[in-house]
Amino acid sequence: MALVGRLGRQLCKRLTPLATSRNISFNLNDQQSEILESTRKFAVEEVVPVAAHYDETGDYPWEVLQKAWDLGIMNTTIPEEYGGLGLSLLEACIVQEEIGFGCTGIATALGGNSLAESPVIIAGSHELKQKYLGRMTEELLVAAYGVTEPSAGSDVASTRTNSRKVGDDYVINGGKMWITNCGHANWFFVFTRSDPDPKAPAAKAFTAFVVDADAPGVTVGRKEWNMGQRASDTRGVTFDDVVVPAANIVGEPGGGFKVAMKCFDKTRPTVGAMSLGLARRALDEATKYSFERKTMGKPIFKHQAIHFMLAEMAMRYELSKLAVWRSCADYDEGRRNTYYASIGKLYGAIAANKNASDAVQIFGGNGYNKEYPVEKLMRDAKIFQIYEGTDQIQKLIIGREHLMKYL
Image (tube, rainbow, N blue to C red; front, top):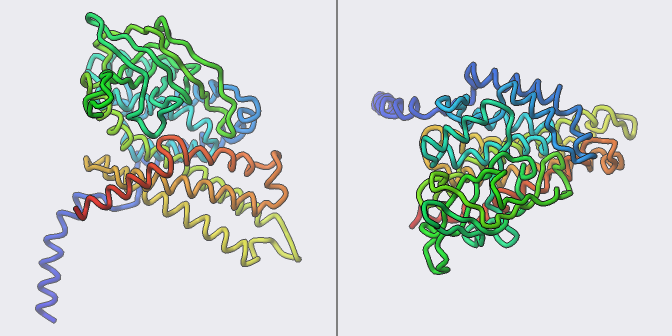
């Protein structure tokens, strides 16, 4: 026993530095707790009451975004050097979950800025950051991330929008589709093919730019009327001989593919966080309703069938949250988080869709009616399985990352 005790103490000494260098605690620090409390209050008081209105009208939620900007919960990861708060990825995800609880359409409109800003933060020059990130912190503006095309969604390498060097500038031609914030953007992040050779390796064939929305040749399409998340402005945009200075390249010429891939490790956790908000909202609405609705002489939560459904909804939310938070912890501590980013994004989408469906089931006939909130949740949830990489793409990534451990 004495030997076991000595070995145990020696093992603890060796593990202590590892444990302290890696934050495994799930307790939020004071700043994170303040962010959570203020954003949750904002979501309940400013987002939930107007969510149905924006879903019905499809209006862009400028008033809500202005209040969010005033509160400081937009553009959260812009570094302090450029006027932002410089929040960690975990803190940004805390914000997105809470806004997602209120309305994922509004959360997508709000989070669209961070999506467009991420490649500039990751790979942009100091001058580019000053010019385009700085303005986002001076007044309420929105930006758009232009990667998806009619024939190139999750398959980024199939991009057809092209750029060619002309003198000291570049000229862009092509079109993007399903672009968030497109109709109101001040500027776009635009991903282009710069090497026309179809056999050119992806790592050298694409160049990314920041393009001003008012540049000659930029034409924005009509607002798309989608199944859900209607507060989010989604449109197509075309680029017809749009001249962009070389200074607006994000990263290196030909290095756009690497920039886009690095961005996914940062942006997929935030999408996973939005889906957490919806999954939690579905659980919250279903639980409260189960106390109000009575059948066979008792509240329905006392029926084992409902009890089990609520338990499964809670499990899905908590387990997907673990994956999202793990991906944030790895990213914030400088480790590659691709594996957990895809797990969090995928399982968050599954949790949101299944929880929304179960909430409708628990509401019964009322759940199928627009007068009750869960009908909207079910429509809003589906897009989580599509945008920022489909479920099938996430499975490919997860499988690849897993197999790499054995190769």
